[in-house]
Image (cartoon, rainbow, N blue to C red; front, side, top):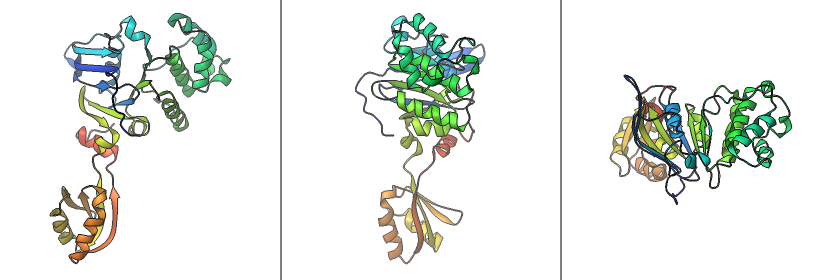
Length: 305
């Protein structure tokens, strides 16, 4: 996805945000900025501090240090919450009420118009199961009903905490499609996840959190880096030395009998011509792109999600 130009002040902004529980630091010196109209992925391993951060942004817990603004207001303030819909951890509903009736109850509490219930059920593709009791819903349906509840106020900002957690592959695909549908136009989505593929497929920008600290923030392409070129050449060492001396090549190394160049893939034709003119036989040449997983492992010093 391409980065969207910020036209308004950030909807979510933190400065030095932190949370301690006794001697345990859950979040430390967190500075993130979520722009209007984007899907922002908050990526990190389980226990990295994602849910703690979202709870602070919603005013459910108080920070130990730093500040945060949500829709220009203090977290948890009536003004801020009016424009926020959230699904944090597992959704909880009355098991013996239908999906529709659960939303009607919630709609009365949050002051949304009655017709909004049918609209959000349609958005999450639960209209055909609206009469069924919540206890009969599958896990994926329960998660979608949770998103429907978060959408009742037609919020500017939608906060989703691990929305695909525990779902089977189809349920995960359905949830990703749902997030893409609701996260467009002026609505902003702040999505926490420990799933690299999920973030890669639905998010415009990503903040990577590790052991309570933000280690980087940017688009998926920015996190991956500039990519490179992979080629098969003979003689290999001579090709490496020559390629390393060329303008625009930031690095050249040999891996598994192939030459890997850290450079802009658009320079492939020029590099190929230089190698061939120097007598190097090039048998294969193709652009390579560092995966988000590679970038994450590098940023978190090899710790897996």
